[in-house]
Image (cartoon, rainbow, N blue to C red; front, side, top):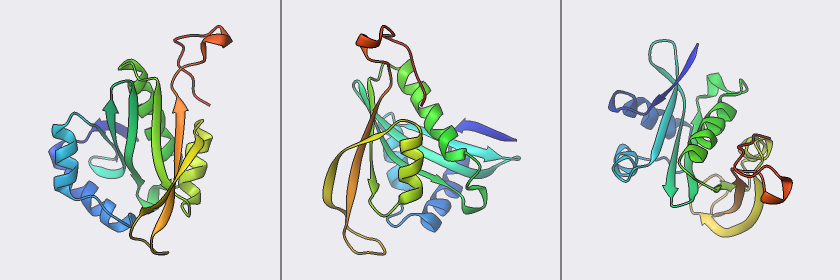
Length: 163
């Protein structure tokens, strides 16, 4: 059974280890702690007693949230955990008054792009050379965005939706 929990200090070491295993430019414990101090949204998906299966960090900025990092442990992939994290982020963003969620994703990261598209994100721009390190050297990022509410013209203002 998976549980979605706040990223409390006991999980930090496991999140940093997982980030080092799966990310091209992994976040350090200090970076995550800094985001926590700044009021970021930090969550872990925990399998069993305390196995970190996935994590996400997002920064609320007025009426927009910015997904900073999201990861799922290789042995837990293809089970919908990334989608669970994204849906939890969207629910909390709506509850806190966000109108949009934005993110950057490596052009080469097709699984992540498909995840984000699957929950309603669309590409709104490109940041050239945004990622400085990785298997392909400097790499562009796609900037993706998704509204948290239905447009006023649909007659469904203030309704949360998931794609």
